[in-house]
Image 1 (spheres, each protein chain N blue to C red):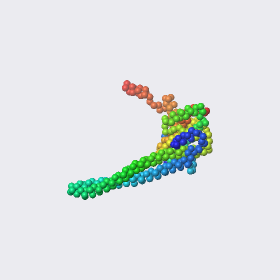
Image 2: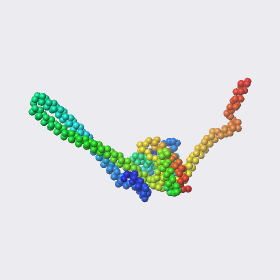
Image 3: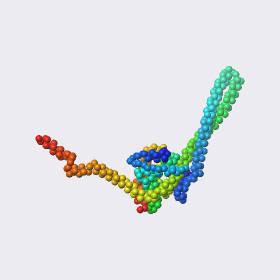
Image 4: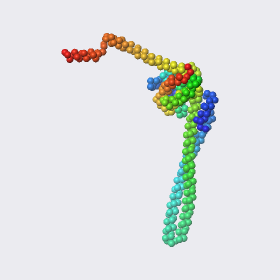
Length: 137
Length: 230
């Protein structure tokens, strides 16, 4: 599914009690990105990118500067351990930001994509809540 | 070096600027070229394979035809000997010799073709493997590139958006606040609805035994007992 098509479909779609707002960050000649906000939580937007094979859904959680430096290793280890149990999503680091992401096949249905988005949005909030201990006050 | 290893080294080095390409555009072109080359090789190998397999079949047919001729002439030679015509039998035997030479030549050609087929099948396999491998690596490179480009696009959007400046802690607080607000709204809506319906007043009146009180089981039992006694 193309990103602009996804954006249009999301506007009128509601699933698992959640609604979506989205807008395309056009990046002509390079990579377009669709910013999706699930249930009005615009603090944790999900950025959807389409490559040849995958739809990448990424939500940025926090900056590495926000991590208490003495707990950094422990946090990394915990996130690695959580990667398997956490449903559909995995933790990642992009540049200096920690992120949570999910990857789907480009042939995924709208139901698959929205399920991914809703799960990712919930996981992002849960993850942020769980790691506050490791973040600077 | 595999792309994953290259990426690993680049990330471990940590010296690169944010958004700097780990694998340059040239690297991607090389991969794409390697895939195209392997696809061409695959195409050629498959074409040669069908040609050689056809030739192998032709040669096999020739050999069986020669075999048939040899058997036929052996029978003739036998018949000539039976008739005591040794000279003719010798002539036929010479002919059989020619056939056997022809057969040996064809068998040599056949084994050449068979070996060629084995080699071509291996080439097809290798080309297919190489294509798959290069495509997998290219996917990794392209995904890395896409994520980098996407990150840059996202960053430029985030920087124009004040909400990005807040820390994760603040974000979480705001989300929690919003969830609480929603819960409160829902509670308030329920309260309002029951007010409008007068559910609240009715409940208070019922408690005080005023209005349409629902009959209590004790009262019902008393009524039944009264009926039995009468």
